Length: 596
Image (cartoon, rainbow, N blue to C red; front, top):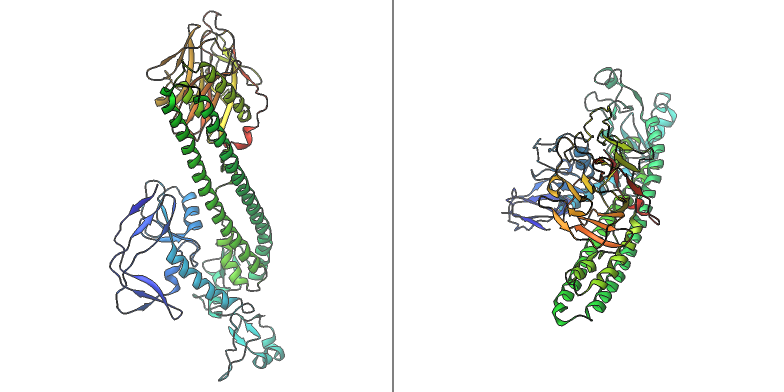
């Protein structure tokens, strides 16, 4: 959703004039922000007022102390590199502004500052031309008077660049021959310690900054310091490995791009097929069901449009991440060949910061966006379409098989009266309370147990054999559910379950439980969780028929398979609940599972 905010912006808009950066006043600006990371645009009316020259400091990130890379603005008005601010918040207890210390409730929107990005790129280009003399602007001799001559070397002791003729004393005089000569570079004054006016020839590993000899006797006493040459070589070696890792990330994301594109094409084909099938079903109905047919087609097309829009957004994000990684790799490659050790060390922290990109395993685009949709439409006219409903239920259950996961019971969560098998697949009431430590994860009153792993994304399916039991509860539970005292099974309390009571009463558990009318007693219950769609469905696995579905929920935490074998009831309900393996399941690769 687009969120538009009209703000009063401090007067001023930066424009370029004859290679310099100038400031002009204006009356107001409009900032348009989109969730997470938006594009920052300005609409201005420039007024004829005096111009003021801006310095590079005004386009410098206060976290990395360098010119902005992908600058973004936060609500307080300050700007930072996207990687810097996201890394800062990731490693901080509070979400605040590093510059003014304003504290935010939750992570705020990041608005991309396109103007600061453009200016930063211009500054970086000019700076790069000054550093990489062979690739850009020439460095001239500082001694020549009148006609300037290109410099041959720069002396790090004299802090002067020399042409061939003025360099001659450094090659002849013994006291000058010991001076450190490098390829000509600009801004030699930046290689001097501003406090001690000494050459920055050491690197403090304790503080990760370049220092002079005098610094090691003051602020950096007893710190781990090494010559910049040695540290530069080590950083180059690290960058080679980093470059390989970045290249691997690029390949991984390129592969994910192809997978998403392929998934979208399959999704289109499946959506078309679902529409055709639905038309075939509804063509045999009376005119009274024509409205239901149109609604079904509309729902399928809406889901497909949403899937395509989401895929389009994911592709855009991946392409932006790939572009950033390519830029980072190219800069690493340039720095790995430079002899400017100081520049390399100054840029290394920004290059070595871990990417804030989302892992590719978390990016999922399902090719089948209509799973269950046709069944819901047919169920609305159940009396006329019993045979069609059975047909669709069977097809749907067959599709569930590819989302099968391996589920095991977690003994840390089991009520002390419950007995778990050694393989973690069976649970029953043991009639005797075990002497177990009452940890936070354990149910202390209700005879319940959760699975070892919870799920935060994807589609999951597992089957539980209930056999001839007269009472049981099955479903999923949120990670933060109350496990002490009486447990209320309802979505409002974090439980999405169905239950059996008195051997024949099946209910969907809620504040007002819904009685379920089943044509036959299920021996094996299949549970299907679609995290993104907010759906929990139950099936008679042997009859391949649908039992009940909780729909249109929004899950915000890890969801765990939930089991309650209930009390043995003097032996009549002694049989265990058994987690049954499902053939053909390969859904584990699409999951992001966590452990309590």
